[in-house]
Image 1 (cartoon, rainbow, N blue to C red):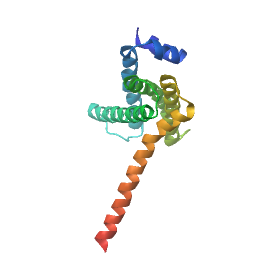
Image 2 (image 1 turned 90 degrees about the vertical axis):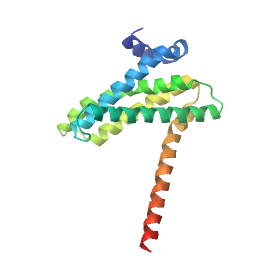
Image 3 (image 1 turned 180 degrees about the vertical axis):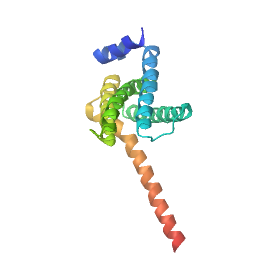
Length: 181
């Protein structure tokens, strides 16, 4: 099965596709989605000179995207397994990668932002919301869970990162105050 047919089946009938396919078919869609999504983000960031040009910069953005996808997929799977929902962590990682195809919407929105019709931050946030909604939808089908539980599983890694940054920020302020006094 080629990539276009795989993505088409995933969009048309996600429940049947997830149940009947093996990790190999979803794997190609997930890896290609991650690569294509990373390329779209990289092009969007290059439009506004937010990252330096070159293949090395693209590889850095790709490594960051793969790391983020791996962290979020593993944290979501851990939470769902701890709450009694059964599913496949590898399929979840590949489906998270497949949702990265939606980042391709950034490129035309970036052109509109260059023409000053739209705001680049709003464009990025719009695409992020679309990707998160797609992840919730696919997670619900993979683990057979409710929308609220899928939203909770998706938001817990973000909450953990926010709490970690808040702790580091508070520690930095306390350290600066300690240095001054």
